[in-house]
Length: 431
Image (cartoon, rainbow, N blue to C red; front, side, top):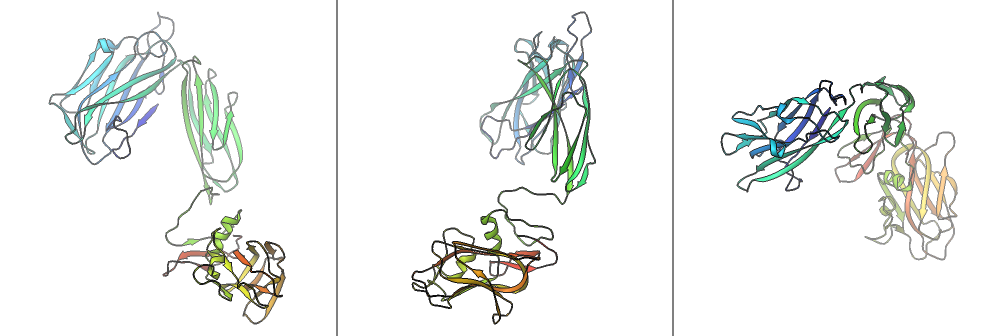
């Protein structure tokens, strides 16, 4: 088994170790000795690899390992006097302080600077293992400092499991290890019968105590699977965890916020499931305009495309017939949908599309606060999309979002002006 404690100065508590520790055991995992006191004891070994992650050296005065010993489940060894302590750091020696059940490692000098280029190991060999299955806490105390500050004790605890002699969990495999999006995998493992087993992966916890394999269908993203074995007294159980992974080619992604510095090319299906997501995509369309332009500096046409819920384009107080608000896609493109979000009231009008701003095709009247139109047969070729006032309304109207769904894949990138521009590429996409 392997336990890792990595520390760096930035972001750690004042009492956290300044060094990083990786613990391995032989055998892996450690085995408890037979409960029959006449049977020979199992022998184990613990190796702790030590390093300094930060570039600034840490002064280390001593390292102490407190090892529980006795006949109970939390005890690691039966007799610490039989354990052989070693340390690979030049000038350092180890000894047992029997009264404290501690192995103490100290340098010949007052302290030793440990930098990132100086790694070493601490080894406890010939450990006579306790006869009770369970988890034993080993406390490591590092007396260290940085700079000219006072030396301070910094503790960390490693929980070392002692398993039944006949326990095993091994060869946890995922086949195939690389699949196409939506592919199937088979998990297999070898295990003993004296434990309970649980399979864990994102969003799933499944008991598999009675199995040694499991087939899973429709894997759509890179997935790490964990197989957890639990055995021993429920009051102090031991746990062993193995992992395996499948890599999915062209995986589905589930992310929160995404910041892109540069270009993004989308050549497959891009689906926006919320108005927020769709308006964000639409915010990359090159230009928006209106007649009249709107309230200078506050409610201009570009506010229809800024992706915000607290801004909008506003018409004149009493709109005129043939006033309009329009989006220019920059060139003729195939689109699959139009969505216009008015803030409250809707002026009498219709939505039209054109390739040249001369010949217009009606796409229906806008009569509700949210106008929506989906094009049949894969979409229509357009460049301009506008809302046109057809009758003189009695009140002002406002457009919060003017959303055009492209029917072709596109590349989005930051232009020289700092705005998001959209350029057409090949392939189909819903955005």
